[in-house]
Image (cartoon, rainbow, N blue to C red):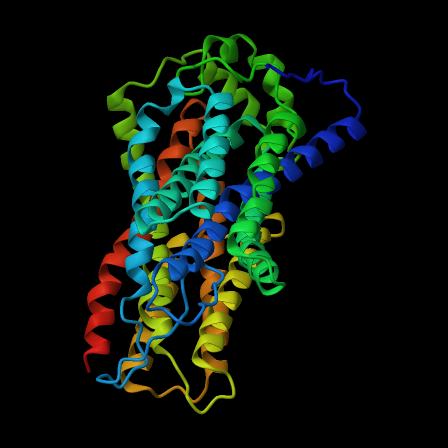
Length: 444
């Protein structure tokens, strides 16, 4: 299904504007659906697990990040602790995505984008069905694993895909992924609280992978040389070289004065294109460390807060229950992420390392707050976690924006996929670190 649109430079501005908006909306929906299913799956998995464990007599409230917020009081601790940290669930959830992101950039170019999207679609559908029909804990866990595979493969594939389009689609992707955190948990909660069972709710949510497939195959306007069902070498197949003039209008869509010389530079690169070798890829990875490390550090601090500290920040004098406080922590965090991931259309922030340091300050501050309990009320924490979400979302979208801007044309596709490991690695390490910290605090 090679759909192409003639990129003739004499196309009217009105037509180009419509194409640009179609692609922006398409990437927004891809980001929303790619992360939406993952958030909903985690929330639903916990509800179904509750049915499978007869000793659980209360129904948990799904949090916006997909973690169970049911609080089991540990009477031997001065903290109102879960029996097991939510970091344990997070660690199990993130590992499949991490494995995919570590390995796929070295071979995924051999798989056409059309097949990748079909795999994302199928694994998302399977995850919904497995969890909805699960009768054992193991079956539910496998359902979440399939959701993780769909999300991980989708993220690195759609980030790589963005190099074939105007750079503005990155802001659409970022905004969509940010919206998924808020919309996914909100809609799941709304359906279940309206009286629908988790199983029926998951059946309704099957529309999400359908929207993802429709957005990709029918909404996006692909360049004529795009290898939809053909494998290509690292995004620079012969068809891309031969048709470099045909693709040029996509690059020249930006009218910023600082990009006036870019087409000439890229045309020179096209003349010397060759497939990237394994050594080339390792060299590119080394150059990406200046992006991967700050992004990973932001997410390490961010999820250390979310999964290791927030459930311990309970204010018994507040009119909000512990579950309500935790739910608002996570909701405001997701609102911050959504706002900052959408901000790319307004401004860019190059100093990503500064955002990682500020996020670490947040983690240290809240760590001391948990230990010394000096914060007066949950409203202070609300402000901090909103700020935390703003930092995390901004670090994500700006990282990939500047990777695209500062990477050679024939290396961009690989670079975008490879750098996506940064956030997942940070999340996995934070989950591993949060487990002993949670155990320490709960033993006090």
